[in-house]
Image (cartoon, rainbow, N blue to C red; front, side, top):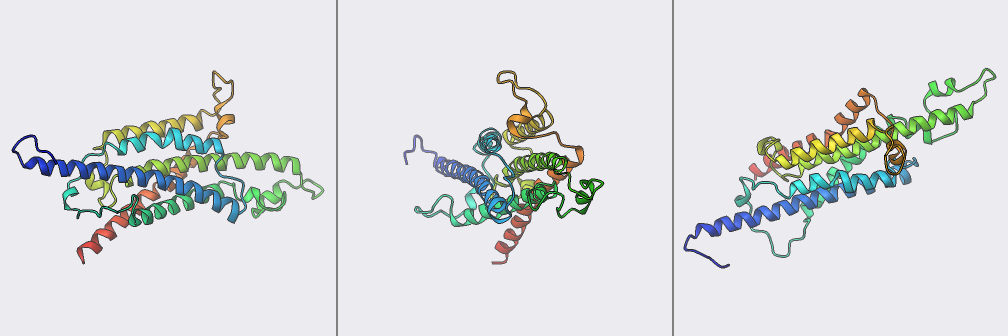
Length: 277
């Protein structure tokens, strides 16, 4: 350490700045890995356990990882120094990044996102229409609806409707997974402090990235009938999405916010346990 003047308080400021940088790197890593863990687990759960068609396509995953996750992740890198940064004990020189505590949190958040996305996909029709035989699904109304006057299954009509319902389910899964990432970036601002204590809107970069990403998601889904000027393909055909109804957006948003509230509860429990030690 080299001091350029005789003000020893600069040492404290330098340590604070170093801890802030480490804190932001740690938050960035936790956010990025939790997203990837959730994506991998979603594929495993939906395909290998339940035998569904993929809730998210390869193109959708690329959009999530490149366009939607990027701005919030960068915004975490300019998070302000937290008030308790100097209360943390010195970390071991050989401590891994992410450390075991971070990995536990990453998997917890990932599981919440997977369960929510799978539930939205299922209840939107994605799971039901991809299992069993035509006109013999778990939903009895569907079975009656697609029987003709001779009691036979109209497979052509059933398959057309099944594909339509699957597209809605896949779009809902795409939307809820992106919104999960936006709510999760609020969690990742701190591993132990509540977002309400930090201030929800005091990181303007995160607020802006949240608003921009949410607006872009709304444009991609509700504007899915718009034709892309260069390649001449509709957004919906390129991303495999269809417009959602207002009720669908309410369900998707409410489900995605669960990851925020689950982590807020965890932080409260963790702080109470720390006080009792």
